[in-house]
Image 1 (cartoon, each protein chain N blue to C red):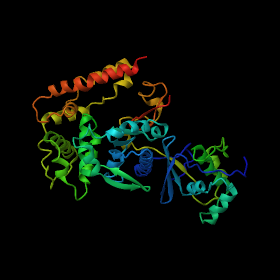
Image 2: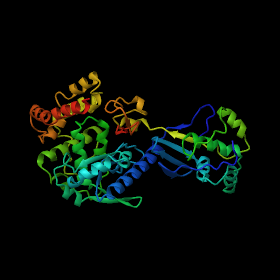
Image 3: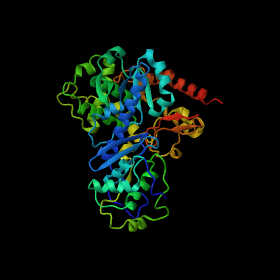
Amino acid sequence: MQYDPDQDEDEVFDEFRWSTIYRATQQKKIVEAFRLFRSDGIEPVLFKGWAIARAFPETVSRISSDTDLAVSSAEFRRAEAIRTSPAGRKLVIDLHNEFSRHDSLEWETLFARCETTEIDGETIRILRPEDHLRVVCVHWLIDGAQYREKLWDIYYLVANRPKDFDWQMCLDEVESRRRRWIVCAIGLAAKYFGLDLSGTPISNAAETLPKWLIDRVEKEWASEMKLEPLDAHFRNPRKFLLQLKKRTPPNPIAATVDVGGSFDSRLRLHYQLHSFGRRGLASIRRSISYNRP
Amino acid sequence: MSELQTPKARKRGLVVQEMPGEILVYDTETNKAHCLNDSAAFVWTSCNGVNTVSDIVREFEANAKGTVTQDFVWLAIDQLSSKGLLETKIEPKFKGKSRRDVLKTIGLVSVAALPIIASLAAPQSALAATSCNCSRDSECNLVNQVCPTMMCANRGMTPAFTCTG
């Protein structure tokens, strides 16, 4: 670094330095979050965010602005109170009630086979790589596959998987439709980012992708408008209407996963209608109720 | 400007990562990252609430960091204070002076590398990976629309909102 007499301040654009300190900061928040929950006898499981970033090369930034933690249903209410406490708010925790939205295996099964790692002397429980990959794939699909850059999460979780990664555990313990979702998500990473799947049981995943899925993914990536919470735009009629338009009809990828549908079904409409009935109306009602004076 | 001031390095809310020849600091209260070069890092770690500027000059030279003057150390302290890295803000020694004037004041007597505290800008690739590119609340179209006292807890990253009401 050079002292520049012509500038008012010095600024450095360096991805390595930035990601180094950012990761250190994320680690500190994770440790504090675990200590906070454990002080009340709650055992969380860390997933996404830092747990994914470990699979990224050191020179590549993988940002996560919050810490995703899952707790058991029995502990969820207490955990939510901690999350919204002054100490909890500072840590920006995204709290999940088990993995009910992201996986079909029982919480007890996933919890029992978690890995642990140490950060600053604190034992941090993380989903096992096989389970984590499944959850991350489903999470990306539930988001409608909107974010191309987040497909890199799947890429690196596969590319840098441990040598003893168990594909059977990852894919064959869940129902066949879910398996297909996950194989498709991984296949998309192979198709668009060149993920090497040779030597895996899904080496042809990129070749067997449904056409509608490819078309929709490319449409989402080409669109600048992303889904945002309706709540946030209730007082801005134009943006509220744009967000409603974005949801009508619901994203077919998200809708199919939301209602447990098949990626190989010829039609999407029935999934979209079902999903809209389940979540869309509830979302609008919630938004109106939240913003009622 | 009291030469007997004993500045103290702030620890609260900071994440510190030592690297070869520099220190990286992330301020969790302002969500800003800084890079302190070797000289700035040494001055910062010497600010223990007991050392005066003269003490820090002596320590600097005793640790074979080079020959420096009090103005050299004050340059570091000014920057540390303006970046919020000291427990209490200190009246700037070089207030109103341009950087060129400051360099002339310090001159060539100080042969060690000038203390630099640079802001670390988030790389574009990092910002592109988030769903929010705002670097301050005023840029965020979601702040203040749900709750009047809500603030964005993650400027420059995927927004997570904290209601301060």
